[in-house]
Amino acid sequence: MMNIMEEIDKINQQLRVKGYKMTPQREVTLKVLLENEKDHLSAEDVFMLVKERLPEIGIATVYRTLEMLSELHVVEKMNFGDGVARFDLRSEDSAHMHHHLICNICGALKEIKEDWLTDLEERLKREYGFQVTDHRLDFMGFYQTCSSGECKREGKSDGKAVS
Image (tube, rainbow, N blue to C red; front, side, top):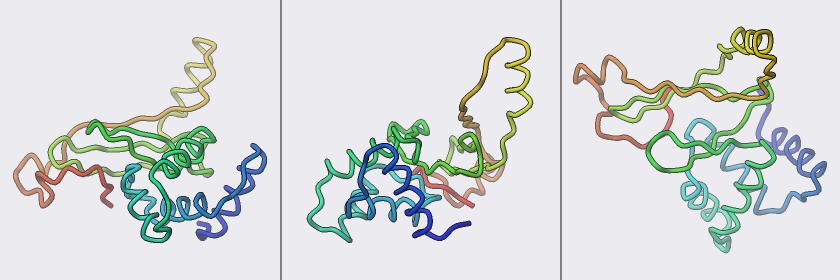
């Protein structure tokens, strides 16, 4: 895994190819996203963390940066059923977004990095002539510990990842 500065350099190259510059505001926003990669931050979460480092930044700048990063497929804008848009970094290790397990009881979220849909994609291409370019799969349900009353997170649905 690359360190944060190597990741930022790589994303900076992506920006330049698309005609964007790496501004200090964009760099701090990216650092916050990279440092909190597993937390699936909302725009407001990102803003609050960026504001700690750049007190003069406005929320509109953070929103525009997140939208630009989403359009460039650096991040994926996601909603896990709680009505809040969250931002998840895309990995260059995989051609597609990773999958998620989302607990309906406590809101715990776990990432699955393996791509389980490769065979299905090949079947779709073979049987329907459909080439999948991307996919995202979220499994909604509950952990056994939550349904048995043993959940330590119960009632704490915040959309943040657990490991």
